[in-house]
Amino acid sequence: VPLRAIKDKLHYTGVKYLPEDDAEAQMWWYMNRYQEFDKLYNSIINNYVDGKITAKQANLTYLLSFTDEMYYQLEKMANKHKLEDNNFKKLRFKIFTSNIAFTYSNQRYLLLKKHKGYFSNEEVARFEKILNWYFSLKDYCAEKEKQGYDFIFNNPKFYDSESRLVYLLTSRIIENKIAKKETICNTEITEFHIVSRRVLEKFALKEAYKSYNNRLLSAYSSLTEKIKNTCEMK
Image (cartoon, rainbow, N blue to C red; front, side, top):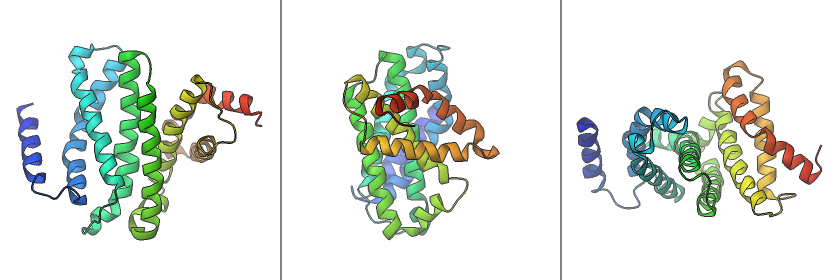
């Protein structure tokens, strides 16, 4: 813990000298703060969700504040401030999609569902924003940061990661709409959900992706059936 505190202090001391709109700061946040979360806290969250440790033992307040930090970094990344470093240009879209956005969308949901037993409309609104930011950044990278776009869509290792994110976000948005008795048929959100599921089903046939994608698809199989039945889809 002392070493982590020193590392965090060095990070914040360094980035405070960068301009507010400096995109490099978001990349440094990923390499320092996000990597710390990934290595130290994912297992703690899983243990808390599984009931192996209490909220106090997990330091729930800190974990939620850390996921808040992720959300604000995603918002900054979505502003698409110019990057100078070519390696960062290559990685920005992947970092947003495969790492920060997916981790936030998964772990924030699990923490709040365990803690409160439900996921609020305000939290779902965040998911809707992240989905919009994702598509906006995707369009930007396709046009102005082609190396980052290609790194996802021409890379077998990461290609399905964007579909995982879209599938995860749309699943929870649609669940909320169903709970509020809002229409889900013939909507853009449902179309995104269906397309992303088809991509994941395709990748689930490949051994390298089979285990994870099947778990994700299985988790929302009942939602898939509900969409089919509600919208009379085949």
